[in-house]
Image 1 (cartoon, rainbow, N blue to C red):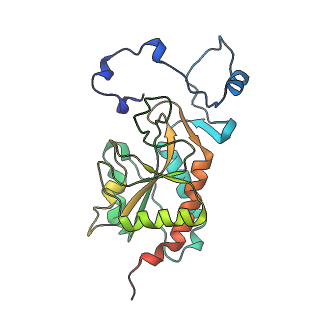
Image 2: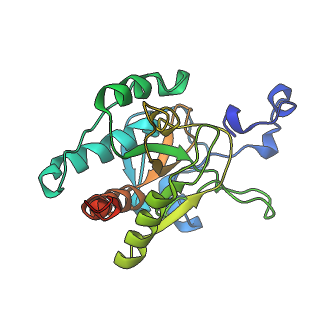
Image 3: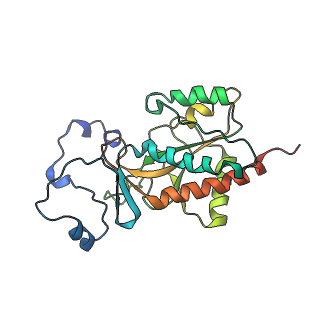
Length: 235
């Protein structure tokens, strides 16, 4: 587990070897035996690489995944019936600071925060629900420690996904926060929601994500942005 998922007592315990495992991105015995052999050495390798099943490995997917999604949406900005502002914020991990300044300057009508989020779907007790599931689609945050998502934006995302057959999931509540936590408090208030790509092992040297989740987030958001004016009050 990454440290932010450990209980206080667990943080002071040495992990037993029979409780350790290495996720190499495989999903079957045959695929595993093709990928590694007994006796292979193991070390942190943060270079980006592609793996079977549409998985990719690399560092800092939280928040490189969110930045990449924003770039894809900005490339199609001419398709949206409004001005679209994209901000690559700084210092999210130490107080959501960049988002606070940006929201004050831009004065947005609505805000969508993109990120790579916790994905703890690997072996654990069956009575515990994972925060998100790799391959389950874009993860919509309903609430976290910093904000409650605007119901209208959540409804827009869900209806857009279901209408177009786009996989999505709701992020299960847990610790943590997103830039939406600062943006929604800017000036007179900004309706906000966070949408994320599930990433295993965020805040560690190596992360894993599914390209299908990333692609579905971009597709969902591109269609939702086109439909966004339906939320505007009638003149």
